[in-house]
Image 1: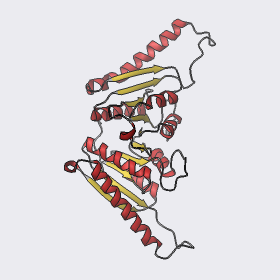
Image 2: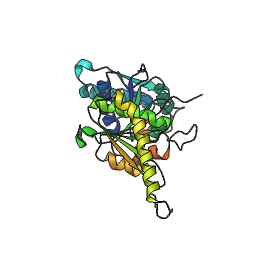
Image 3: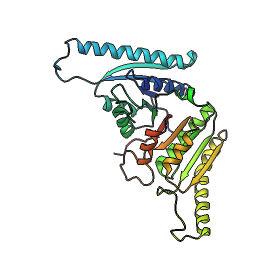
Length: 300
């Protein structure tokens, strides 16, 4: 990617849940592909005063549990990487969980979180910590679902990216090409130029020639947005999809045969300061495979 690698490399948050274990494996492989460090982090939220019913040694027990989780996650990360290139560090941080992870994102190339943590309700779409990190991070965030994508998808499966012309979409495109190039796979670029669902053109009294003109124009727009990236990444094959439809079902449809989806945190319809758009939220919740949400530092 064009922006400079940050000092922390890739940061993965862990809590001992199955989701976070898969997140560690995914983050380790991605860090190895990029040849950047991996930082495994367990954040222990501080306790405010004694809690009734808990033994006096509970804080010490909690710290020991955190240490064990981090050690196990560190081992998982190293095993997922080639020993000769493993650059893994780990730490236990005592601080409010979300603020600590968001602060780390200021010096990270990417944050990686599991879709659900230890406290998540069965069937929950996205855990509270993961959701807050996706909303507030200062760098791209990868959300990893419980199943290991390498055991459920072919390593030749493409990377899917949603493109709508917004600045976040441009960053998502850069990330998608970067990830595809490292993986040696293609990119499926989905440009859904309306979020109103399939247009009933006859009901709108639009002539076929007008429909053809609009579709041709949108195909040209997509080609223009991709041309620079195709020149920069000549090794990445691109399959373009232009539809008049809600982008969410189209992205989820393509995700069924992909290994990764990349979306902007909010699209061209998002207002200034918007944290997460409806499209990115729906894709993160429903894709079932790793999703990278493109985020940039917040303006002050």
